Image (spheres, rainbow, N blue to C red):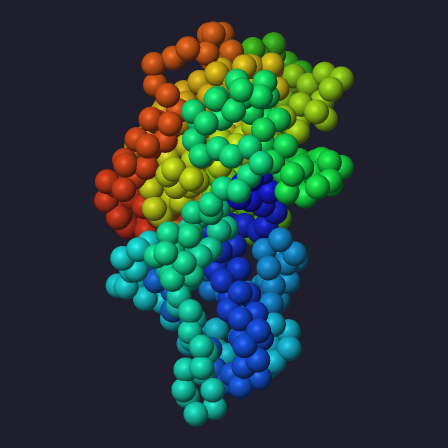
Length: 460
Ligand code: SF4
């Protein structure tokens, strides 16, 4: 089953599909070598980055992520500060300690091979890893697909259609209509359905609550780090804005009575998170890293401006409801910019945040579904064109815009009775079909859109 802790995963920036997925693939590969008892035979490893992973891999630190994965690091436990250190050490010694257990020669600039002209027919985010013995014979190879949101699959599993996990949840749902029917039948809110599934999975109510609370703690500290940080973002040298925005809001508050100031806070929270993501910091995928600012920004808005005595429960309801919407998008469409454009990343995050906020305000399941639908519908067609292959322009501002849109979608839904013309399931289907129709240059390749009309930040 996929649930709350699959949609919200703690990891590192700047990208879930181009950083976290490849790191996980590298680590899975060396673990497979160990499992087969062939780790010690390996003398050489080649990694081939294909399609979108090649086109925007430099900007997303895909090569660094794979190197750390081969060394045994995983996105949820790696210390982000150690990544550049590991890369620098390898560049100096040309040695790599596979899984921290077996050292081989490895040249970061030669053994990671960028295949710009090769794309798997199954998915734009492919990587192949080959391990050789001392006679230069391949002892093991695997092709991985980074599906989006940090999920990976082997090509074999992907072709066997097992990439999209089968639901064995207690309350089994595959789409928004299922959620509404289940809610009606068992008299449950969407957040209760999502939380009950996790309790059934972990058999421990407190553990589930602690894990949800931890998601918000990581989001919240990410907002704080982003606000406190000054200076420039890596590679592009783009100036960070969150700190200045924060000061400007304070300055404005003391001199004006600005009715739109709350909107400034929502934007600030999103910018802070996405700048941390761009800087490779600790992040919660929500549902991806590129779109990681939307949910924390709207949850931050709830926390700062709307929450009352039952704030902790409200935060849990928000996260669980948002996750349930993420689950049905993953099951029926995509959350990958490389597969379906930015509508699949930021659009999905916007829908999740709108649903979560609506839940905290006592919205019915119908109103929650309505809010998610409004939010997603008005992101349809949005392309992915990251400038310089970096998750900075347009990504950082885009999260702020989507966060504000999510608040608006929630308010519109809350002021209706939940009846509406477009079902969320139809909108999700439309998003996916539109994404598939998008030309490749608008799907995280940096070959079109702003990426070719703005030259400021460049690939390394
Ligand atoms: S444009 Fe959107 S989908 Fe593309 S990298 Fe940026 S946030 Fe992700």
